[in-house]
Structures are given as structure tokens and as C-alpha cells.
Image (cartoon, rainbow, N blue to C red; front, side, top):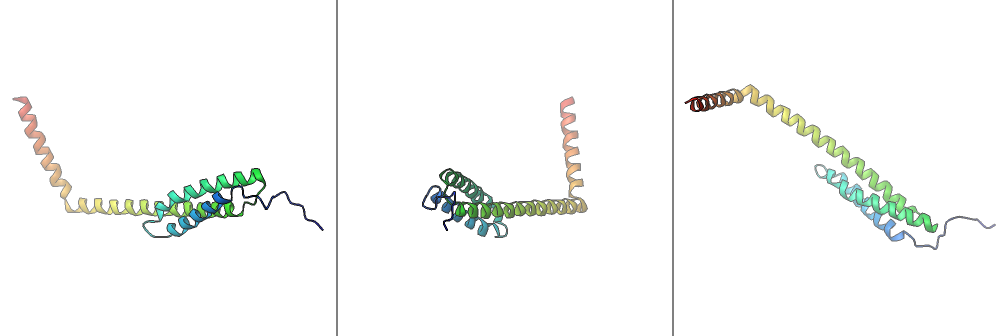
Length: 131
């Protein structure tokens, strides 16, 4: 029995790009799980998506296998999702820290003395302008 397939397994079209996309995708996934630095994995992940998409296009036109390109695409998409999670966490932590700092400044009365100093400067400049 001969099995018919529309894929040309001897074709190397897109194989190099597929391998590059897979390697970059794997590196991006590994890098994305590093706390505080994982958000920067979005850069190689996008490169991996682009390489994998080009490889899939080339392999599709030639009827070649797309396995490495699909693997690279999946790894890269996972890396983008994890990196976006780190961006969200970083923004949330920065917002909470900013709110905590503002609350402490308000409690200490530092803004009151700053406002008094600004009012005094305004009074001085107003009297200088009227003379």
C-alpha cells in the first residue's frame, strides 16, 4: 500500500528559517520565565514569530514539512504571553509602590510645607510685579 501525501518530505524549503524560529522561540521561552527580566523576552519572541511565519509560508508553497516552524511559533507565542504577564505585574507593582509613596508623603506633611513655600514665593513675585 502506498500512502499518498501532499507534502514533499525531500524539500528543504523553509527548513533553515524554521530551525532558527524554533531556536529563538525556545530561548525566548526560557528567558521569559526569569523574574524582572522576563518582560524583555518579548523582543526575541517577536523575532521567533516572524521567522516561523516566513518558514511556514515557504514550506507551504513547496509542500515541505512545517514541524519546526510550528514548534517555533508555539514557543514564541508562549514567550510573548509570559512576557506580557511580566509587563502587567511590573506595572501593577509600580502603581502600588507609587500609591504607597504618595500616601506616606501626605501623612508626613511634606506637601503642606512645600505648598506654603510655593505660596510665599508667589506672594513675593506678585508684590514685585505690582511695584
